[in-house]
Structure formats: C-alpha cells, structure tokens
Image (tube, rainbow, N blue to C red; front, side, top):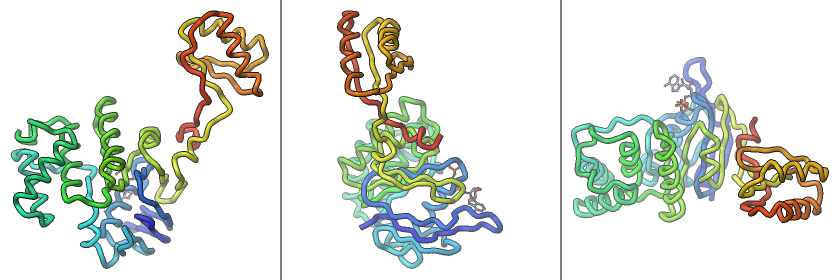
Length: 296
Ligand SMILES: Nc1ncnc2c1ncn2[C@@H]1O[C@H](COP(=O)(O)OP(=O)(O)OP(=O)(O)O)[C@@H](O)[C@H]1O
C-alpha cells in the first residue's frame, strides 16, 4: 500500500499555481522530496496533513483521504515544520512532554516517551535547559523529537538540515536514516539539495515549479557508470601517464584517477601499472552516478 498517493493535485493561490496536476504514489521507506525554493514542497506537505484544501485533485496518506480525514492523518503522522516557533523560555523536556500530552498520552507515559525520544535525537542533559539558549542543531533536534513523540507511522520533515553546518548536516541525515531503519517509521523529508537526500533515501521525488519531474528509487538514479575510480597511495600522475600511453582515456579528479572502461583488459592494465610502479592500490571501483548529474 502506498503511504502517499496523489492524483492530479493542483493548488492555486490567486493566479499563482504552486502545485500543478501532481500525480504520484510513494511506498513505505525513507522518501526524499526535492525541489528548488518555491517548488511547492511545503504546500504539498500542508495538503497531505489535511491542513490546506487543494484547489483540485485528490490525495491520500496511509490510505486516509486528506479531504475528510485530516485529524486521523495527523494522529498517525508526525510533522517537523520548516520554520521553528519554539518557545524560548521552556525546556525541551517541558515542551515535548506537553505535546505528548496533547496527543493524548497519560502523564507518566508522556514523560517516559519524551525522555526516550529526546535521547534518541541526541539531546541529553541540555534537555532541561530553556530552548532559548540552544544552537540551531539542538533546535532542529527538538523539532524532530516533537514530531516523533506520539509514535507515528510516518513523519514529514520539512528542510530538517536548514541552517546546519556540514557536521551538523551529516548528523541530522544519519539520524533521519535511523528513524526510517531502526525505528521503522516511514519518512518524507524535503530538501533543495539533491546530493544530501541521495545518501539517506530509498526513493526520491523531484518537483519543479509545482510539477512532477521524476519519482524513482534512488538506485535507479545512481546506476553504475562505465568509469573506474582508481586511488593509489602515491604516484597518481605517473600511473595516469602509463595508462594513457597504454591507450586508456584517463583524467585526474581530486586524489583519484577516472578511467573509462574500454573492455575487461582495462582492469589488467591498471593492475599491471600499479604493480610496475610498486605503489599501494587504495581503491578500484566502478563509479556510480550521482542524482545531481542526472538533472544537470
Ligand atoms: N498562502 C500562500 N499564498 C500565496 N502564495 C503562496 C502561499 N503559500 C505558498 N505560496 C507560494 O507557492 C510557492 C510554493 O511555496 P512552498 O512554500 O510550497 O515552496 P517550497 O518548495 O516549500 O520552498 P521553500 O523551501 O522555499 O519553502 C511559492 O512561490 C510561494 O510563494
């Protein structure tokens, strides 16, 4: 059963079309929703939560119709909004316990669930301090915790890596992947960066100007290419010259050489070249496409 299905979904704000005849079906797993700023990602999420009635078309989440079953959808779906409106003078614990109580959990269960969830997202002692003093990364974690505290089947995460530095981004992406794999919760995560979603998603939906560009498994975006990545401990350029002299198409990229695979003999030529130079071979693998290349 698809977790999200839309049919000819269109959303107009006055004369402006934010979503244009969008039809898609998404299976459980970690799903990326990619598009430039203004592509319509947040609008789609609000429609899927039953908070914004579409101009036309249908949409269902977990087999529930957004038109009449919004409250049931929101019971089963967690939502991490793009912009935060976290109260600065309460602690993460107080906020998440409060939101768990609002979802209907009894007091003791709400406290236990909040503590577990905050630990899972990586907030420990600091969870007792007021949110006003938190870093952007900690605030994003609080937003993630409140989306997870009522044990949803599915979470919508709107730009969860916004404002994070590279290390913070990596940690957040790893956390999102764990939500999908270890906690068994399906995820719809938005980003304007294709590259970061490629690393953690099973499936990617790309929208542009409110229209569907592509909806496919990440594997099919990142098929192996006909290029080998070769990394040696030293003598990269000498190896490159040898391979070029032997007739191979070779070019340097960063610390590696990229070698076009002509035929099976290509592997033998690389092996012989490395052996003759007496250097250590660190990496020899077929390069995979990156999603970004598909859209370039
Ligand atoms: N309530 C509204 N009234 C008028 N226009 C709106 C409204 N909400 C969204 N839009 C417009 O619809 C388009 C899509 O907005 P949306 O927020 O869905 O984009 P997005 O892909 O989430 O981008 P971002 O990451 O920048 O928020 C934008 O051009 C936006 O200005």
